[in-house]
Image 1 (spheres, helix red, strand yellow):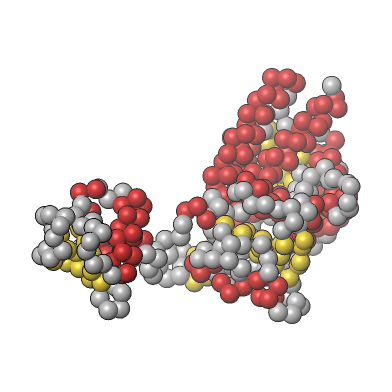
Image 2 (image 1 turned 180 degrees about the vertical axis):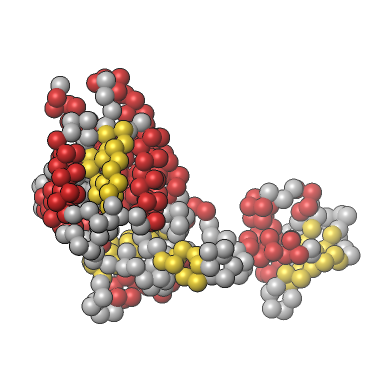
Length: 380
């Protein structure tokens, strides 16, 4: 870089030189670009000029202004306002889910070779909600990719509760079906709790049967299945190398679908767990003491940077629509965590979308495989 031990250099030049070396590694800039270059800074410490010398012994070369792309790259390396988050911090839920689904596919193949059968999943959908129909299509596609048989029952919204219960009872009795999922929400005239309770516990791959939740909450007992989304959160932490045992964990939200099951699962992993909810006083103070935060409150950007301890691991379950004129749909999806700020202090964090979402279906496939394997081993 044109420096030697006998020449006078100021602290700013040394800092910029170090940044150049980092820039070369991160941006893959060729070595000739950096050879025999010395940078000087203004009084405010901002890089302004690039000095190019033909001989390393010269510190008075002609000056050349940086191209805008070079300024942007150097500012990014130094953590400027346009810098992107460190990729090592981002938990890639898509990649982890894809890996799990690949593992399940291999296990299903092995199961078929051993028993001549594959697991089967039945999905019951009542009504014509577009979002529910989309979720069901995604689940059927995941079944096809994993080699799992998919049973599908669509019912009109005006169906009676008794008709839905009859469909569930038929799948309970079907030996080729090892898991049953009733897509929620159901029409308002139906009792969701009654219909979900009709699913036999051995086929409750969604993990919401009262007996499964009860065993999840008891020390020394293991449920047959755990709810898919909170299970996916814990698996993301484990596969990202986050230490759970002994960690202080905060779950933001206490819903039956995510918050409460997630808290119970973390306790089974020997975490010390606090649940923050709408009546909690000073939630930010509680969160600042957490090594792990699972945000599942359903409130966009609720968890701010000043809620997060440096080095904490963040799992963002929230999926909120916020107006965005730049998007074709007029909105974009965002989580419960202020991601752009939180990523600056977190050691690990999930994006939205692309974090927890893909894991939900992966865990559903995992639960269905476990159920099918359990039934086949009993039949043997």
